[in-house]
Image 1 (cartoon, rainbow, N blue to C red):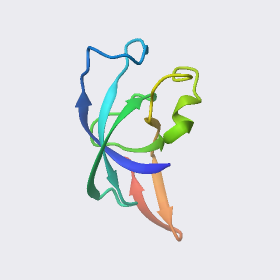
Image 2: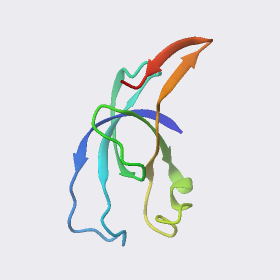
Image 3: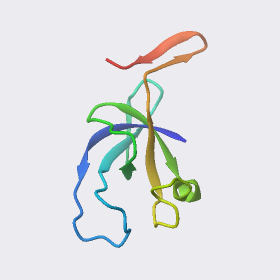
Length: 96
């Protein structure tokens, strides 16, 4: 899994994925402190994340192992919203 920050939404009305009412997010890969790396992905949101939140993204074949995405052409999913994170016992991220 990768850490990412939600930066926006992506709207695609013509799709072949077969998922009803999907919500796609534009996410930026980030470090443990939420600093962006200028690497961008489009991810299907499964958890209701909002702009600015740090999230965990799954990529690759594991993205097709949920009830919603089984057998669908998905390569990136938002699977969790990060509440807090510590590194070596020191808090480095806390959701506001």
